[in-house]
Length: 338
Image (cartoon, rainbow, N blue to C red; front, side):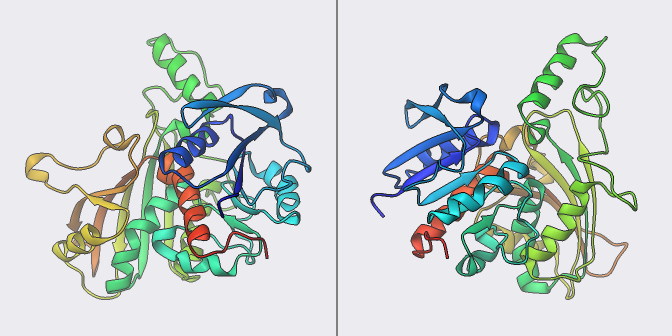
C-alpha cells in the first residue's frame, strides 16, 4: 500500500479541508494526495502537510490510479462521481447523505460497527454528524443493558451548515442589536435557537431528524428501535451538543454507565457536577473524542438515564470519522473496490 493515491473531493469546503488536515495529522500512508473541487475552485490551492496542493476539477476522469477517495462534495456530486471512482478501482468514503440508507452500502462508525466494512462494494457511507456522536456513546450501554427507547434533542453548531452559515452568524453578531435578516437559514441565528435543520417532511419531522432516526437504527442493527429526535440549530460556531434520554432493556445505574463509557474507545467522560465539570461545545472544538457528561437517572421511566453528549462536528462528526474508516479499510486490506 506504499503507493496508495488518495483523492479528497470537495477539498475546498470546511469538511474537505479538515479531511486534508487529519490525513496529515494522523500520518495516513498516502504516496500522493490530490485535491478535487468544482470548476470554479480549480487552480486554487489548499493546505496539506505543511505545504500547498493545487486543486483540480472534479470530473469522471479524476480517479485514475486512485485507491481511496474521500468525498465531501454534497449528495448530488457523490451520486454523479462516486461510481466513476469505484469503476476504476477506488474505494469511496462518502460524507454526504447520498448512500447512507442504501442497503448495499455500509454506514459506519469504526468504534461501533467496523465489521460492516467487510461487506463494502466500493462505497462506504459516513453517517450524519449528530448520529455519529450519539451511537458512539450508546454502543457501550447497548452492549451491557440493551436499548428500549432513545429520545434525543440536538443543539447543532452552524459549521454543520457550511462556511456560509459561519459567515452568516458572524455578520449577525457583528451587526447586533440590528442584525440583518435571515440568510441561508430560515430565521436569524445570532442570539437565537432555530428548531429546523434541513427541510420539513410529511408528519412534521425535518430531514435531519429523520436521518438521526434511520441512521441510528441502521448502525446499531436495530431496525425497530424507537428513536425520537428534535434537531435545533444554535448560535455556536463549532461543536454539536445533544441531550439524550436512554431507556435500556435491563437496569443500568449512572455509576455503571460512567464505568462503561470511561472504558469505551473514542469516548471521554467529563462528569463531576460538584466541580462544574461537564463537556461544552467550546471545550471540545478541535478535539477528537466524543465527550459525555451529566449522567443521571431519569426517575420518570423504568431503566432510564439522561446523558449530555458533545463532539466537534467537523472532526469526529465528519472528517475524522471518514479518515478512521479509511484506516480500518487499510488495516484490514479492504482498500479495493468489490
